[in-house]
Amino acid sequence: MTSHLRTIIIGNGGAAMESVMALRTCGDESEIHLFTDSAFPALNPTLLTYFIAEKIGFKGLFPFSGNLYEKHGVTLHQGSKVVKLDALGKTVENSAGVKMGYDHCVVCSGASPVIPKEYKEYKGSIAFTIRSVHDAEELKKRISPGKKALVAGASMAGIKVVEALAQQGMDVTLTDTQTHVFPFAAHVNCAALIERRLKENGVSLCLGADSSPDLSQYDVIVVCAGVKPNIDFIDKTQVDADDGILVDKFMRTNRAGLYAAGDCAEMRGDASGYVAPGLWASARYMGRAAGNNIAGKSEACREVIRHNNARFFGVDFTSIGDIFHCGDTADVFKMESDGKYCRIHWKDGCIVGINLLNMPEISGILKSHTQKAQKLSSVAMGRVFDKYPPIREVFLKRGI
Image (cartoon, rainbow, N blue to C red):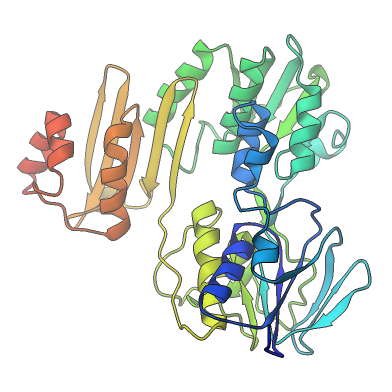
């Protein structure tokens, strides 16, 4: 590399790797230094539950090529947490005492699990979170047939942990302060069908604000209660931040040369488009946009709607967009038959939210329409209509 410019990447996940690859793809020749407290290659944390369930091996946790750093000329600073970022002086410092200046910096520091206070006294003894390789390896050591496990958090990650533990012979209870599973992704009617399936597979449910399981009765507790951005090294008098570091659609912060991407970043209210937080795809698109813009490409981050696809206990669940905030202004299609469930909300001719159970053959088509905000038509929906005539009948009656 011949350039005297220096770019620092903080983090080692999807956003960080996409930043690196975008920089080099655009021909950027700056020094790239990557700071991370991890000793492992770039991790996809959404794969940890598959590792716990023994559906993938250890190497499967790391989706990027092992020689990516060397290939792109990245200098690694591993095993030490970044403790300070001076956005005015343009320096980064880690716990090992390495202090380095930068011309550009991309903060891709990710997020850490939230641990409710009632579980903190058990942390490190029988309570685990699922966010790192260490978390997953420690939990795997505790899995034992016949032992009792409590999973706190009826989220996508929580359900996958429930399945992994139950299928390896543990007696599992799922608890959440919300009244139904997937409270931010599933309509209550869809959630009821999922809950029935969980019970059929021997999972006990303890849901609602008044539910308070006796933690002392469990051999293992797994907390899946959400995450918070890792930005404790950020000086909020220098860098605009709320829950995460505030960025525009180009991933720029309020400080020259400083960008943020992934779970630690939060789109400013005036940023056009929408990027759903907490998704692997979102983190990658944000990281790619940051790298492209540092390299001078001027590229807004690709819009990403919230979407979830999960298969557990033989059930295929898909949630796309938003089914909660359209109220009476949206048209709604509902269908439940033979173990299948479909709920579609559309407004002004465009789909805005979807719940599906056991209908994976149409989820991709509907996701594409929702993502692109395409006006619905009998031609565009042809494959959906052919597969499910009841959907055709309702949509055609509404002039689609």
